[in-house]
Structure formats: structure tokens, C-alpha cells
Amino acid sequence: MKVLIVGAGPAGSTAAYHLATAGVEVTVLEKTRFPREKVCGDGLTPRAVREMQLMGLPHDPAEGWRRNKGLRLIAGGRTVEVPWPELSNFPNYGLIRTRLGFDEALAVHARAAGATILEGHSVTSALTDDAGKVVGATASVLDEAGRKTGETANFYADVVLAADGNSTRTAVSLGHEKRDDRPMGVAYRTYFTSPRHDDDWMEGWLELNAPSRGGQPGKTLPGYGWVFGVGDGTSNVGLGILNSSKEFGKLDYRQVLRDWTASMPAEWGFTPENQVGPIRGAALPMGFNRTPHYSDGLMLLGDAGGMVSPFNGEGISYAMESARFAAEHIIRASGANSKLATDHVLNGYADFVKEQWGSHFTLGRMFASLIGKPAIMKLALRTGMPVPVLMRFIVRMMANLTDAGERGFEDRVIHLLEKLVPATSNQGISTHIQATSLPIVSVK
Figure 1 (cartoon, rainbow, N blue to C red):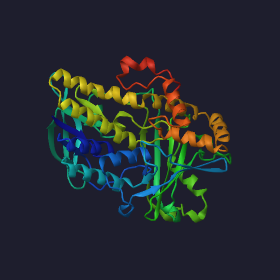
Figure 2: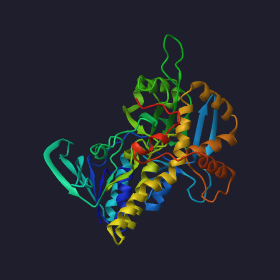
Figure 3: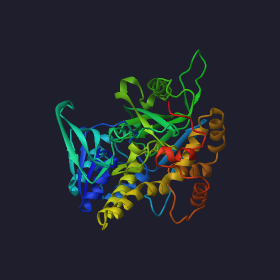
Figure 4: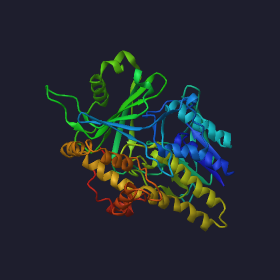
């Protein structure tokens, strides 16, 4: 079986590694050239670190991987430090690594396993046969500067994996548009040289306000800010905003970030003269906002399938997990003894993804809707921040870190909550739109 992967980010390279390790012929088309920058908080939770461990991907501190102890949460004048939990199925540490280094490390790892990664190949559309089955993709060949050379190439495979991010030209070329019944977010970040670059905690600020007008403080925004020490003399400072508010899409988020950092203590160094690079932004496609996740030879992975958590904007771990899930299904399908059996196994990918995260994402969608109401957000912070036990539970819930054996009280409660809600659908819109009756604000 031949597999074609579009995109060599965390999802694409992870899938390529697992497939190549199993002896599957796999080619990855990546439009940019490594090393390359991506807009991200650069934070890896224990969920993402587990995927790295399963791949055997080295992450030695001497090579630029900075370990962290957990989350430091700040709101209402209070600070709570929540260590990553001790669980049987996750490591007890997170990592900070810029995407400049992280994505290249993943691609190098996949190549070493036997995957072919072609840089400078920008996929424009999927290729289908007369029956409508996806059989490959068409790519424009780019030069070293990222400009089109005028050359195009067709690549053929038995299965195609769309791992080309939120814009996913592969899926869009087949009519798989974004769903307006799922939450959406945006993230903006920049870097500052700062003495806080070696902080051992991933810091989250749970209160963000819109820019003030007429001397009046701005409204509370449904999102959070972060300060992540990169360890190289800089800190990644950014913010994530959900679309569950009237202000979504109407604010200058770069100015929101500037105003927020201007309010920080001067000794932290988050000032214009210490800024490294521009403020950059990107969309956060959440809650399975593009479906179906499998259809006629095409699998959607990571951001291409809207696999960002509505709870906290985390996407890397879900991208890598979806890649592993896809690879496992393809490997099993390659051993099937008939076309019917092969199709059955491949079709099971979407159901498996739904089973793994569907209920968690439903709770996340409810959360995203609720924090869009400033009064509810303020009440939740006033209630939760003074109670460390509650905050530890919330961190476990939002980061989706539970013990499979339900050893602790938190595990049992979280699993019970997930059993009480319907799983978010990741099938086609036409047959499942009626199941999305949660009060989620439409994407602008």
C-alpha cells in the first residue's frame, strides 16, 4: 500500500514515521522548506510528550528542549501553580520547543525511519478517479525562495492523508468546508528577550480585556494569555481568543497583545525594544470543525480536521495522536485480504477518533460557549482560583489528562462527565447536523 501525506507538520511527520517504521511506502509533500516558523505557543503538554516518547523522538535539554513542571495560572490577583499529574499513561512533564526546531526534528525523525519528504511542493488539489475516490494530489513545485516555478507534479497513492493545517487545500478541493456549528479561535504571539526565559512553568493568564475606550476598561474576552520561557534568552508571549463573544473578529488582536504586555512589570522585558520578530497570528480550528474525517481514500489529520481542543487551544498533541491513529488503521488495512475488508478498516478511523475525543470535545464546546459570557467567566474565576484542589481538577479536565485505570477521584469524575454528553460528530454535515444542538456561536 502506498500512502501520500500532504503537510510535514506534527501530524504529517508523525504519521510518516509510524508508517515508514511499519514498512509502508510513504511520501510527504511539504510546501515550505525546513527549518521554518509556525505560529504557536511552542508549549507541549504531557499528552504531546507521550507521542514523542512513542516515536522514540529524543528531547534532550542540551538540544533545545526545555522541560516544565506544570501550569501557573493567574487571575483575579491570585496565582496558582498546578504541577502536571502523576499518571500511569502520561509523563509528568511538559516541554517548550519552538516550532522552528520541533517541526524539523519530527521531519528528520520520519526521514530516518524511511519516509520520503519532498519540500517545496505546494499541494493545490486532490486527485480523484472516475468513481470519486481520492487517488493522489497535484502539487506546484516551488523554488528555494518559495516561488512557483511553473512546474506541477501529480502524486498517486492508495490513501491520502490531509495534514495541511487549517486551510487544507486538499480537503477544500473536495468540497469539505468548515462547519459553522463548531467553535473557532485565533492565536497571536511574539517573542521577547527576557530574564523569564528559563521559567519552569507554563504560565496562563485567565483574564484578558479588550482595549479600553473612552477611559473605560475593555470587556473581558473569552480567552487567555500565556508566557512560556523558551530557554534561549526569549519568552513566547501570546494570547488565544474564542469566537464565543460579540467582539470576535472586530478587535485588533495585535493591539490587545501590545496593551497586555505593556501592563507587565518592566523588569520582565516585554517591551517593544526587546521584541524579537513581528506579532503573528493563526486560526485555531476546534471541535472537529471540518468533516468527514474519512471519505473515499482521504483521511483528515490534526488542524485539517479541526482537532484543536475547545478547552485550551491545544492542537499539537491531537495532531500527533490522530496521525498515529491513521497510521495504525492504514497498517491494519494493508494486511486485509480483500478490498471490502480494506475499506472497512479505513472507514473505522473516523469512528475511532470520535470515540477517543468526541465527548471531551463536546464538553469543550460547552465550555467555549459559557466563557463567552463575561459574567459567567468572572464568577468561575472568583469561585475556582481560591480553591487549589478545584484548579487541579480543571487543569486535568482541560488538558485531557486522565488515568486510563481511573485510579483517582478526578479520573472517575471526568470520565463520568464524558459519558453524560453525546460525542461530537466527525461525520458529514448532512447526516449529523441535527446532533449539534449545543449553544455554540457560529464562526464569523
